[in-house]
Image (cartoon, rainbow, N blue to C red):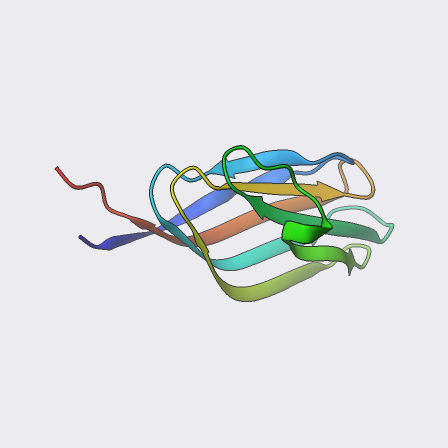
Length: 111
């Protein structure tokens, strides 16, 4: 059983409300998060991971109010494991300001 490199999310334009941007269908390892501010105004981003039934909050946040400067990109190299059915949620302080892209590896399906 191996892992396949893949773009997990995006680019996905965020709004000012939590959205489930990814639901793990198999074990997934997030390796890099790109947050691109496509506007002339700074915006804050929140990312959270929950189980299938959970709700995003500061308790399960992996990024909490990270400011992305106007017309800039933040690159975060991370290692975060998502189990089957875990959800990645994202939101930003200004709807439409931030594009989210997440890359990593996904566990191959077994037969």
